Image (cartoon, rainbow, N blue to C red; front, side, top):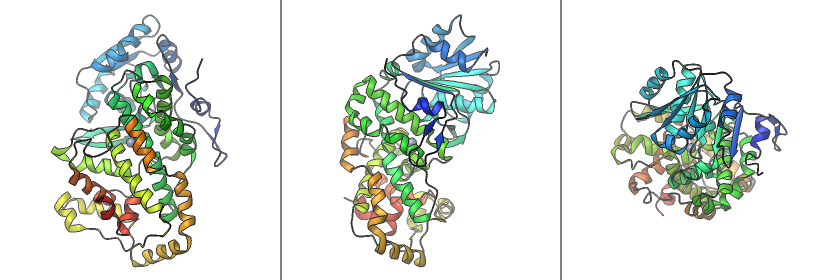
Amino acid sequence: MTDYNGVIKDLIAGKWVNPEDKRKYGIPIKKIEIDKSLDGKESLLISQLHPNQNLLIVSDQFTHKALGSRIYKNLQGKVKADEYIWESPSSSIEGVEFLRKKINDYDGVIAVGSGTVSDSIKYATFLEKKSYSVFATTPMNAYTTGTASISFEGIKKSLVAHYAQGVFFDLEVLSMCPKRLTAAAFADVICRTTAQVDWLMSHKILKTDYQTAPYSLLALYEKDMIESASLIAKGDIEALALLTRISAIMGLGTSFTQTTHVGSMGEHGISHYIDMFAKDNHPGTSHGEQVGIATISISKIQNSILNNNTPPIIKPTQIPEQEIIQKLGHQMLDTIHDAMKTKIFDEKRAEMINNFFQKNWLEFVQPLREKMLHYDIIWNSMGECGALRTPEDAKLDSNFYKDALRYARFIRDRYTILDLAGDSNQLDGLINV
Ligand SMILES: [Zn+2]
């Protein structure tokens, strides 16, 4: 029997050793099970983690059809559980408050699939101090994170919540999920390359924190996953197992590092910019889809600048205040000055970094090049798995997207290639090709 869990088994047992720092690592989730089918195994998985609990199984109308009804049926006579099909699920604070009342009479909750159901349950059970487990219906990072994405008056916030007791992936169920969701999951993990290069670069330039454990884990499967891109699109079980494992590890990344930098740098900043400022012109694309498009843009910029054997010349940082007021509104200026505080270059700092680059450029870029995937590999594999690759694919206005590339660096305090490109006057040239 194939074991689809790979290194996750060692992480659960707390005995995986990171070859980079020789330290042992564990994770806060008690059980993660990835299998070809979990049909008939649900009661065992649940009763181990929720012994003698009175449970509520929550799904929406889609995930109920895909998996929820089967779970409920298979639990009959074995686990004390009721089911609830959430008709109008919403990962808003109102949705969470609604669920808090629903779960009042129960000891724990089993969430079935979808980001909306899973994140709302994660946050509602966190507030109610009740345990929960989740059965996935798509491959996605969010199941294994300890944070929940909840919106307040339309604005999404990433909130500290808690981890699931168990996270269960039935690959046959995943293979039935809409292709668009699998492609988005692929896009939201292939950004490992751009995030790692940005984070390592920030560490080298600004001496910010940097950790290797999640990257050592992702490196175990990334190459195989990329080579399986077209099989992922076809719903092949082995290929989906790779994507699922990588998504689960990506979600767990934060548990090793206590920060989301591992998988969220320049490319995520662009996606956040789209969500914050597209307003009525937002094409309804998902987080993963936007991150995929942005990863391609960031990869192009990273490859262009860091593969150059001549160092860039850094100039003091210019914040284009008038353009920002005109495009993003006056109230953004405070946010921007705050975000830029630690990464702004004045004359002195620029001179220091230029001296450093003149003497050490090749040694500086060497480790970054090692972590960087070639642009063509990203472009081709995303095409093979059916992901959106350009703003045109997403029906996103191309001028708005260029603004996202130009201004996203100002709204987040993370130092990325967009800052290096901006401060060395290369950004406009790279955006307009
Ligand atoms: Zn993401």
